[in-house]
Length: 482
Image (tube, rainbow, N blue to C red):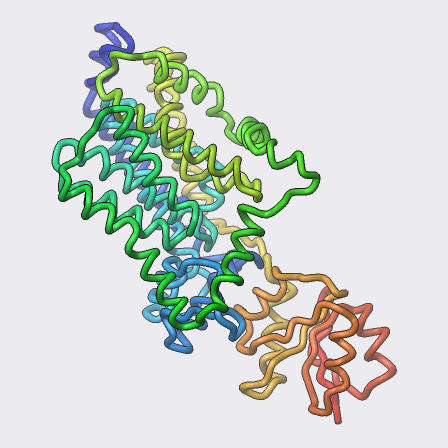
């Protein structure tokens, strides 16, 4: 396809037609990546921030039956759109509560991304380039890291990639615009504001490439893109009235619109993200740069519109991330499929074909070894080794319907509270100041506390009658007596 024009070499063009080898490596990479992503699910526990937070909200959704009114720690969760929580809750309802089920959506979406990257690259550039793009995606360690986490980043990336594929297919068959719109709508109720990147990229692509989707399909796709988010916002206003907007806007302010300290950091988002990508996107960074230069300069390449869309998509994601208050590299993950395809182009430009096939053979062997190692010797990293036994002990020591008081040196330890909620079955009173702790201690009813050891020594050990339920690490779970 397009690479005949790109490389201008008959011998190399013929090498691209080696259908058998390309197919072999496709199936091999598909199998290896499935093992790499799915095998680790059976071991390990959840990190305390987003992983345990989403898991706990999904657990509450199942237990309360309130699917539209998602809650966390017994209170309405008004910050995040709910699609990821709904998916996890549906899986919990079928398979039960477990760490493996919590991480399953990200792992499955990660595998689907790898397959879609192959399909998209093949449509634009041919099978061999598609296999290289697939290999780059499989070898992007930062992507694999988050495909093993119970977080929204990889599912959101999958929805974005599926929407981009629908948009490209829509040029041949306008019915595919409906898929583009639907996936854009689902993306918006997965990651909220960041989901606006898809409609924005499509508008820019339509203007640059003078695309004019049929009015009926364009209108339907636009409705599919925005109706889910509008329906969620309308439902929250209906359930919570004017109390919804301040909470939701406060979250957006913390994540996107708020002031930065010092103030000049408002203008440093672009260099910060460039530096993060430069540090992390190895060994593919040189090939990504070569692929970007090639895609920008090559005007006559077959499939140039698809490559222009990838360039537009990377630019939109980059600008939105750089403009936001939070500067975290995983927010750039939606651009990683485009990075993989451009890196494949760079590989074709910089590496002779014979060495590419040798490299794929080595990669296949390394992938096989890694798959066997992960299957036979699963990871044993425990991220909740301290919290899980404390949460279980506190649950057993607390009557059903009671809340556990939590205080850790006055720090807002959301990682610990999320894990306590996920691994236990009681809600928490989260105390953040000494005054709140003293006020809680003045209440007459017996209570169960989880506190740090210093607080235990200063306020409980020899001052109040109590029973230590469990002590591990820096935390003590105790029950006040009388």
